[in-house]
Length: 104
Image (cartoon, rainbow, N blue to C red):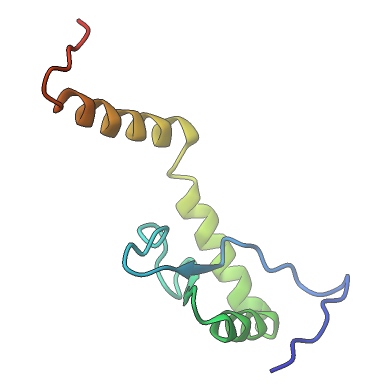
């Protein structure tokens, strides 16, 4: 399958809309709802990703719906909350190690 070149007037296909899923972790798919706020494709099947992008390029209303839902989903997250979540995971793991002193 040959992909046509994207012209400057072609609709923008944001990275938030088509997300590769990697087995077994399925990283990134915990916020993605397939066909609601994005499209999950197999990261090891590039033709599947190309087909998904081509379908979106031909269906502007679907693309806009996915983008709007993706923005709404993203609005519920922040860098600070993500950083705090990661910090708490590391702090918990560190405190579980034998011989680790915790600060009061």
